[in-house]
Each structure stands twice: as structure tokens, then as C-alpha cells.
Image (cartoon, rainbow, N blue to C red; front, side, top):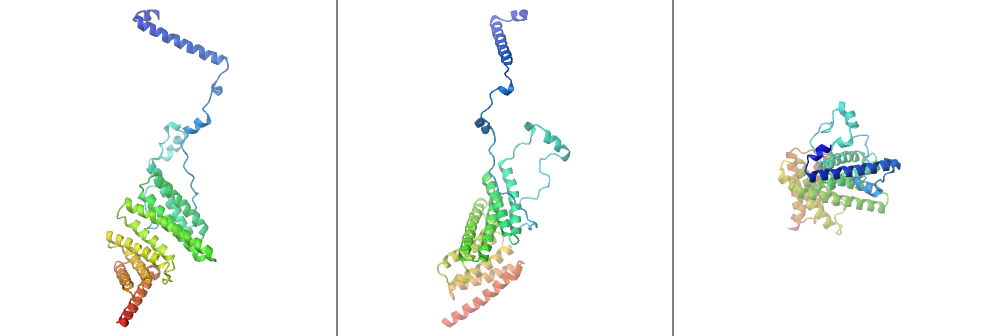
Length: 349
């Protein structure tokens, strides 16, 4: 060792000597610590605050997912993701699952990105939304819980990915379904106060749903599904205003405005796709209702009735389905009302 040191220049020798002395001092200190009985368990640990800072932030708690005994058919109103295989992309094959579970944390799969986490939440929300719709008649209370869980997951997904059209659109769908549930409670209420409270809740839910559809339309201009659902939310709000009593001057302007806005949204859908039979049928229904709020015998009422009949004819030509004969009944009412308006106009002349 001394021969090796001598072969170096004086400065290097001095430097090495210093390093050797430092190492010896460190070893002596370590030996003294051991002699005093210091070990790993008695060494200072991080404070609770420090440990807390090291932990990742916990995600906000979400309502539990409800389950329906019967699963509703997927609705066309749900923003759908492409069909995926059951096996999660990037998951280990079955034979390596045990080995993956035993792997150290440093070798675990990387955390999901914000977009991936948003997608997972959307899929959970869609399942809860379908359950909520399936439970509406059988168990309204369970339906409310499922729809609340769905809305919470879509909201969380939108927080992680604010540009996700699927998260925002489906959030609107969950709110629309909640509005329908509240409207159903209003119809079954046995007292005026209960009915009024339920109607207020329905209107608030549909307003909130409209805000989500508007955001989708901003992110994806011309998106027909957003305009279609937005139109239905607007028409549903108008339905709360007692379409059977159009003489109520206090609510007529608001109902007219809502129905006219709904008709404009459906026109936008048909401008994007003139072959959309469902939109043509819905436009006819909206305009037939709108005519009931117009002045009897006036031009605005006649125009609305003619437009409604035109849309019904277009929907029929496109092969639109008419479950329950709703469009057929509305077309018959529109034809009769238009004929009556024509007779009144002749009498005035």
C-alpha cells in the first residue's frame, strides 16, 4: 500500500490519506453507535405530516353502484365507446397473475393517465345509468341512487378529462334521467307541496342536463346526439308547464320559448343528417305541442300545425318507428286543429 501511495504525486497522496482518515472516523462512529445499542428501530422516523405528504392524494369518494335485477338495453342516448375485449389491455396473462401479484411495488404497472381514469369512470357511470333506467318503475328509490352514482362518476370523469365528450354527454343523460324520475314522482304526489317540490327538482335536473349538452356542442360542433338530447330536455321542461292549460298566460311564453328552442335543435340534427327519421318524428311532436300554446286561430298556430304535419309525413317516409302510436295520434290532432283553424278563418272573412 505504501509503495502504491509513493508512486503518486504528493497532492494525490495527501488526498487519498484524507479520504482514508475520513473513512476510519466514520467506521469508529458507527461502532460507537452499535456499542450504545442504537439500531433501526430507535432511529428517528418521519413525522406523520411528512409521511402524509408522501402519500398520493386519495380520490373523492363516489356513491356505490346500484345493481338492477334486470339490465336495461343500451340506449342510443348513451355516448358509447368502441367495443373492447373483456381482458384489460396490458393486463398480464392468467398464468402470470400470481407472479405479478408477488412482484415488488417498483415493478408494478404504471398508474393510469387522467384520460384512462376518465374512461374507466365513464364505463362505470354508463352501467349505473342503465341500472337506474331499468329500476325507474320497479324501485324509484333504488333508481335515484343508481342515477346519482352515475352522475357522480361522469362528473369525476369530466374533472379528470374536461374535454371528454363521452363524460359530459353521459353526465347530461344521467341528469335527464334524474329529471324524468322527479317528474314521475310529481305525477304521483298526493299533495300540492310534494308535487311542486318534485317538479322543481325535475326542472333543475333538465336545466343542468342542458348545460352539459351545450358544452358537448361547443366541443364537437354539429354533434347530432347532443342536439337531440338537448331538445328532449327542453321539451320535457315545457311539459312541466301543463301543456293541457295553454291559456295560462304566466307560463305560456316560457313554454313557447322552450319548445321553439327544442324545435331549432332538432332542425340542426336534420341539417346534419336529413335521413334521421327519429329527429323528424320528434320535431313533429314538438311542433304539435307548440301549436297548442299559440293564439287560437292565429297564423303562428296554423304555421306550427303545418310544420308538424310536414315532419310527421317526412318521418313516415323515412320509416320512423312509432311506439304506442304517439306520432300518429299527434298527427291526427294536428290535422283536426288545422282544419278547425281554417274554418274559423273563413268565418272571419
